[in-house]
Length: 360
Image (cartoon, rainbow, N blue to C red; front, side, top):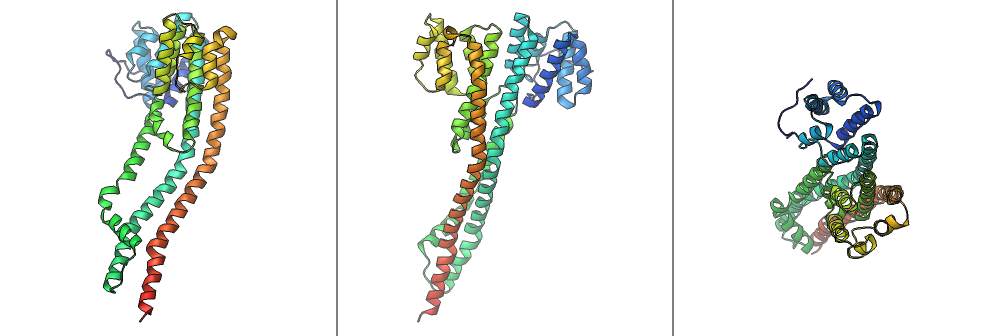
């Protein structure tokens, strides 16, 4: 078994999939009533790679007398603070198993959102990349040859051909733009798979794509409702639970509104009046209503849990439409643009050249 370090954990953050596996191991041990230090030590020997090392470190710390919460806190460079907070609330209420099951639902929802977004994007990006490479080759290689041919024959060039020739001569300035954008998207995608903060802010670039803003809004609303229900179920104070759940989404507007809502409630205002003071649209209408009236109309925890499948099913439907429509729109746009460019740079100049050569 690997021994845990004595200092704070500063390892690379584990992925969401690794955290799901670790959470499943801990939840199974808690349900079985097995000592965590022994169970995690054995799991550390069986689990592959970095996940096994993390489990072994947690086991080693607990063997030295630390609680699970203290061991998680010591490894906060590897395991997200949100996970430690959920385990701590479960320990405080004496029901760690329920807290871990709730965390498992939240993690599965996060993975579901990520799996829905990825396939909706890769094909349009692939088509756009191929179109970009073809345009680069056209502007740098083919257009200068046409211009040279026109000049050698003493024929005037068209305005479109002159423009594309200038674009090709300045390619050294603009050609890295698309590769850099792809690198940024890839970095944000990889970062969204890390469990360090569940930073949905890594996905803010997705709002640039058609229909993606509403899709991400639904998934964030589902994640917020799921986590808020989990925190309230574990008896976290309402204002604190609202801010914690919002911060876990990583969305700036939602975080700001949640802090304003929490501050208003701490000042003594009832939830409905506090929600009325939050003027922006970061909260979706149903979620805003539940936050304002859920505590008076019934169980707010159950109301939040009822919202989760609604938001996720709506987001899944939008993702399915996105996977169907966006590639078609991209193909049509790229095809029409390519046809226009080829017409302006090949067919029209070529017919003009033949006409001039055939004339007196």
